[in-house]
Image (cartoon, helix red, strand yellow):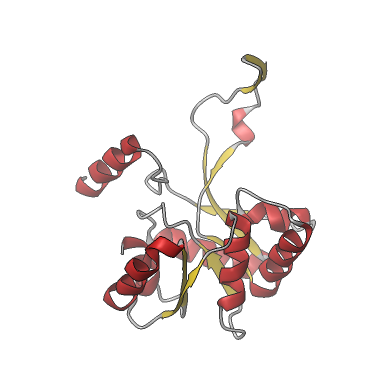
Length: 192
């Protein structure tokens, strides 16, 4: 409910499409009226992959939408500042990626051995909502689905078309909850 509420509360968001797994459809449909403030236009079943799910979602959005924000439901601590920064950045540059600088040293490895150490001063942690001009993200995801290409984020599909993605304000609090430890951290952040 936190994600739906964050976008429903945003002045820059007119419509919300929830894309979810089949086993969570009823739960998502229940969240829509409770947290969506009338902005949820559809709750749809995702595709066979992350990229296909994003494609199905963007194709469900109203044709009059100028921008489309794609948010990962595993990031419930998203804020209005992150959302509005992504919108402003996408309005100016066509594509926006909320991100924060990497704090740890990153190593690339193969077969148990370190192969390189990228310069962390140019590395960022990608977050969501990744935000795009509507026609741009529709074209990028259509291209990906048509070619059967799977991306770990939507910016990669746009980058593949040769479009530069501009960084926007992220937050170290906008964590992705995928492990029990992440949940403990999120609960602590909510209490602080």
